Image (cartoon, rainbow, N blue to C red; front, side):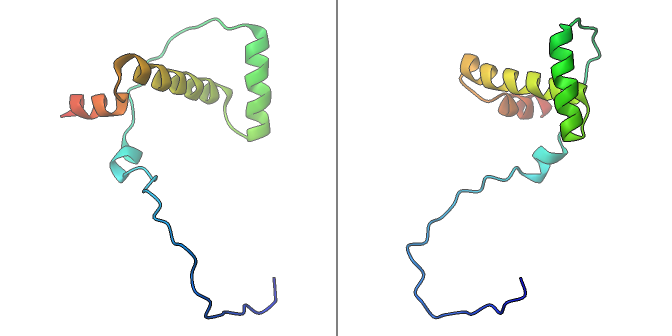
Length: 93
């Protein structure tokens, strides 16, 4: 894009306020405690995640962990009626 930008004095349409969707710095720094386990998965599942991980240049175990975390987050909210993140903050102090 080497063209010149041309500005105008046109009125701005109907501006809308967008809620703050970014996590707070505290949420970004939060790291959950990991627990090492042994689990047996189907070859089909492992091959699937290994293939997707290779496409995304990431680790397949990390993808599986994030999938499980997302599942727990979605279902824990539905069961308890409140966010697990709020519960973690309360437990932390």
